[in-house]
Length: 181
Image (cartoon, rainbow, N blue to C red; front, side, top):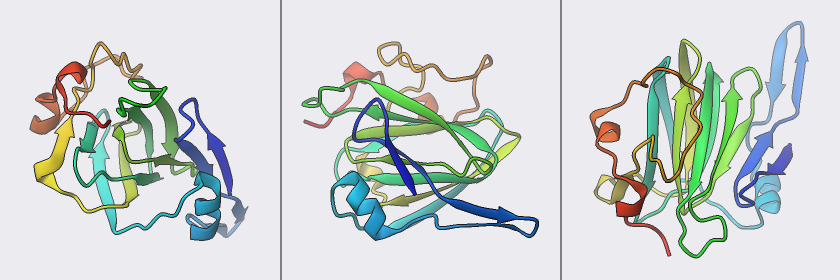
């Protein structure tokens, strides 16, 4: 596996070594020992999630103010633009974001640590998005930043309005949210 630190050093792009031939392919999608060495800390995943979304569905930007979740995300069908936003007030990259295209084809994964808001936009006709989390979903602590917040100025690769859930439509502006210290 190859681990690449992104512009926000705590976020990593993870690229597995893929063995492919005329029969198909094989790759190791997670190796705890290699992963912990790369990110520099112990992790323990407690929940795996799977979402299926249509083209131009945007999910996010979500985080939990208590019971924060780190996420290891990947796409097993389709393609998405995946975004992590640093919402740790004490961080030198506070308020900055990184985005990567991850897909079934490129088999890349994104490591989004605790203290980040996360979201993705489906670019293909549909996408199956899988992610591991380090804490359980706690809806009472979940917060949503509005996807097109002007302060964050995320460059979503879309020219039409995305499809949003009611929760994501009512996301708050960055300056009005509870954030991490």
